[in-house]
Length: 248
Image (cartoon, rainbow, N blue to C red; front, top):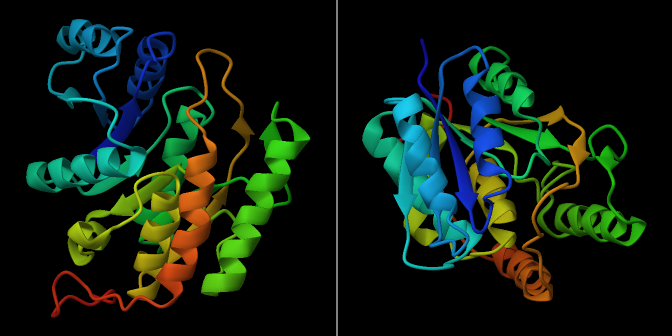
């Protein structure tokens, strides 16, 4: 059976973390989880530690010194996953905006349907977002349209944070060259995979706004993504391993 690791970055998610872990571990498929906690002052990491005895060998924790950014959290998780030999690595939020059951559909898109990166997409079948204010939906939707226009990448939800990467993709990318640290990181990862010739597939999901805890979005996140996309357009991307092709 393929080994599967779900990466869940956290900062002050004590209201959600136990429930989201229970939901993931209740799925078929023997998913493992790595929580990457940025020194949450609310005690998120302590909750994870307390649950590790309940899920031996499946629940892992990486504690960092402070709030270092979403992108660096995922990069740390990717490197850990590669070191541990996982076949598929998933990105997922802790706040139930992503339905854990959809992990199975993202996995199927890669393991059975020919994709090497699968994206849980809010926009490939219209707009599938629940409980967001219209202003935020418009910002998110047009941000993805902007990215498609600038980069030419045929992905409708370029900023999506619910993603499955095959091991081959992560090994073939130069993770040290990733520059964007906020939500622009999501764009950069998808664009890099696409430019290197890997197959991306969007899987329609319904995104639900968090019910507990507070959002980590900020204006600086959008600013980084806006200017970072323009820089990406003119950057030359090379695979981490020159002899590694996406078609292998």
